[in-house]
Amino acid sequence: MPKAVLHRMDLPNYTCGYGTAARDLLRANGFEIEEHILKSRTATDKFKDKHHITTTPLIFIDGVKIGGYTDLKKHLKASKPKKKAFWKR
Image (cartoon, one colour):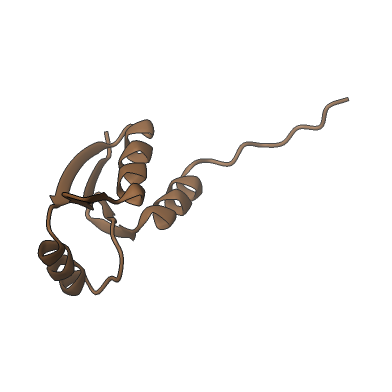
């Protein structure tokens, strides 16, 4: 089972929708998830500064930085084998 590390923001008055969407997408694709929840604005800002990013979530798969939710979708689509198209008669 592949392993993903997910850093997402969940503040008392705001939950990042992209973070929860990323978690759900990882689960749907069979990943073991190590989830790190940023629970304050200060913690979120320090995390973003440390990783040189402007938004959360931030996802790593098997130690490789993937990026945010949109990057995750692209990564998962690219890693799936393409289906061959067959012509119907």
